[in-house]
Length: 101
Image (tube, rainbow, N blue to C red; front, side):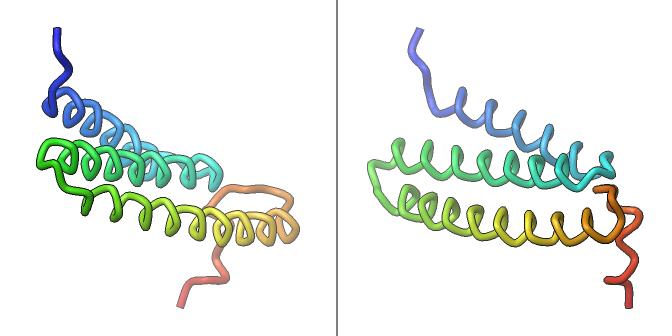
């Protein structure tokens, strides 16, 4: 059996659904950050699958930029997480009320 682009798209949709469910249902900031990474990885999988199917490197270049953005997001997110943990001794998002307008 040959693995086609449809297989990659199905896997990407599953990863995206798991990531969105994790973002919407969890209150722990670590779990939310991991869910955001799952969503970004599903987008990368789509980009690379279509890039391979079309024999074009543009999707792979966008995937590399997405990985760089994800690394920056992880660094900023972990910085906020450390600040919240120092302030509240907990990582639940419900306690982060200082950012409300």
